[in-house]
Length: 374
Image 1: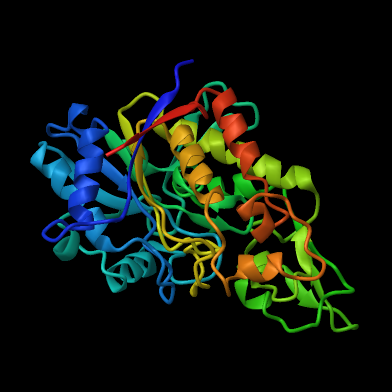
Image 2: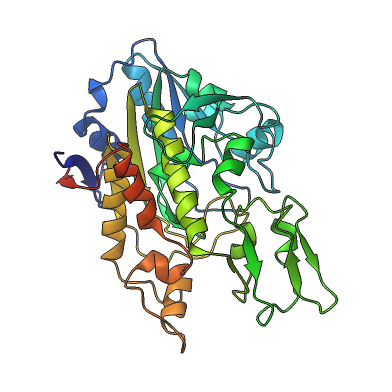
């Protein structure tokens, strides 16, 4: 297989040229104009950000991508699916309100905001996974699959389960309906290390399934029958008392996520853009954000989501941790075990490589790439 082409531009600008101009130049150089957008409904999959979080991508980026699509004759809309966990994006009404609050509206972006899996997260389509090993049919938000063309606009950052969130996570997990997200998470159930738990109840508020209770010894307990394995409690724990129960669970999540992503893009034109900026340790699904663990890198684009994620990860691994960040503090702790991987050092239970390995195996794309600077 020939290496895929991944296009990159840094964040330096000259007077009179904005980063939005550089984004447009990047995607045009990467072959965006070769897609036939004429009268085609085009889904731009983006994360609108949980209100309170300030690291999600600004709507300005989405507007510029949508403007280019409209110039090329397309009919763009911004989309995402509802969440499993509590927050303000668990149904379409609150999700749209959250998107508007964070600046994503028809007036600011020039295109409609559509929640792909409907009012309550159950409007989905079962899509066969060609070459899949773990998922027969992926449960994808209907509006995503009804689109003629699929574009992912990704904020590349850390993640408490998958190591990082990039193109594949934005597509696979992001486009899964409520039952699709549950299917991907189902293999992994976290547990509480009783000797570390301090009974602070921070994990309680993050659980959307009422699966966590306090035992007589004032330690948290997770009911595996109720738990769906979303991993929000892991990030909520300030003393690292909650961990994935076994490594295979994380690997299974990553492999299912890759298969979901393949179901989304197979059989139609697709293109992917990742902005490696504000690299927070956890997902934009949180209603807060910690400071970035690594310096901003730049913008990447490719027709291959696997190569894109690999290129973004490689670029991040070359960076030095930011002093004072979670990653920096962990690396200077007395009991630190160096995995020589910024994402694994941030969340040791994660394993991002298993996702890209499986994605390549099932034909979603190639981990081999040629980086072309614009």
